[in-house]
Length: 159
Image (cartoon, rainbow, N blue to C red):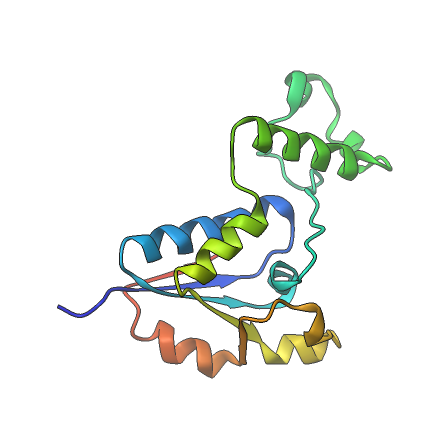
């Protein structure tokens, strides 16, 4: 029996959207899947050596708010200056209190499990990103590189 494959496209660069690709990839690798994450557009933020990701409560109506704020705090209030920082701090504290691994730890776990990280070269060029800001274990390729792997994958996820 051939090895199962999981292909993930990571497109988001916020704290709450950073967890799914790393959790799913590390779990799949632990289950024996050959796994690849293709990072494009804002997902490239997840490859930076120094992660400084934030939570964006604006435009995220499904986000549970602390102290029942979702029932009494107006949605427009999430656009107030400083709310992004407050919500990020609260999310990080909640994750730490619940024992959720850090993004850095999850990313390292993926690399140790031989999850392949591919940065979209077109997006790197489009945004004039400096590849030296990224972690070392990153390969570069375009959509064709992604399809080469994804075309043979058992599961393909867009996150």
